[in-house]
Image 1: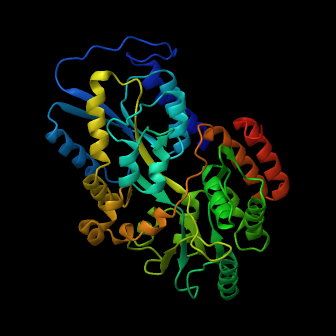
Image 2: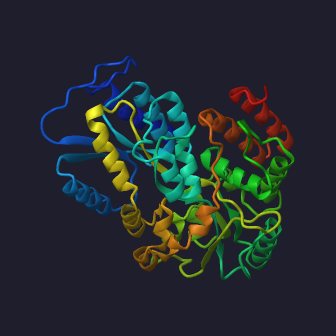
Image 3: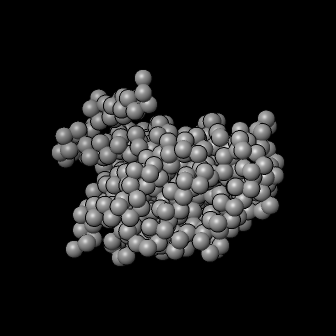
Length: 432
């Protein structure tokens, strides 16, 4: 059975369970009366994706919350790891006005879309925008503030990094030309090596890589509300990405690679460079890893050698707009607790997840137990978000298709970016 069929079946099952098969939800999208508060503890339902292979640290954290709030009971429901499946599930459930969950995870690019649709609550009363901007990393703060209001609580963050083999190159490359030069030199000594592996499959990971190249060539993400791709910098970025294939720096298999595909190749010792997320560091350092002790990390290269901007990734906590009023306060308490400084440090130590609060990176326990996470602060502060727009889902579909056409050699950068810009402008009316 193909992966796409499995995902569709998974999505259908999730939707059936949450929207159609349970009482208390409205699959028709019509408003239903708010249910009365039942006796006993207030039950808050929290939906999230696995943070790691061991569930105990999160369970312990939630148990501490329940002890501190004896009138609240937290029910957890684990979602699939596939973000596209989870996104579609929430689209269906929230459009159907489901009240079967309260707090849920949201990708960094979903908040504006969900806020515009009225599916998530304005939580500015609990976490005012000025507090979010003061206490959280800039990119994470920007992701949850929509039109001056807070629609989510930053939970943990990610950013694109460059991994390199310290035993194969003289130092970390700062420019694109150095990356290409170092990769060619390493491959000249060992032709079995790949030069650079990254995420080139037609999916969201490709969009992240493309924007990192665009920023590395001096490009802007947006001009007011217009998403920009067909620019001098955009064309230079896409030409560079195609050049990686024409000059043999990246193997053809990269055009079908995701994060784990790239990681497996790099961790097997078969590549000089890799673009990926911070989680790969822990995997590379595990006992038995062929590259343990032979890996360095750095910011992504740029044209001029200045530190590159990694694409901002990560997850926020959002509050279902259809949560009954008598569960709202309990749900906000849970969101505030899970995104607190203490929780962020505990999750970072347990799972290697990067805290969203600035102060966490100066915490003594974090610096002692997870120094790699603590040292990522400059990279995370330098990360940039993809276009912040309620239309992002539709825009991403366009970008994935056109960026894929370039890296696969189907169309030239000029042709693809011209097509992409026209479609983006049509979606957002940015060209009017």
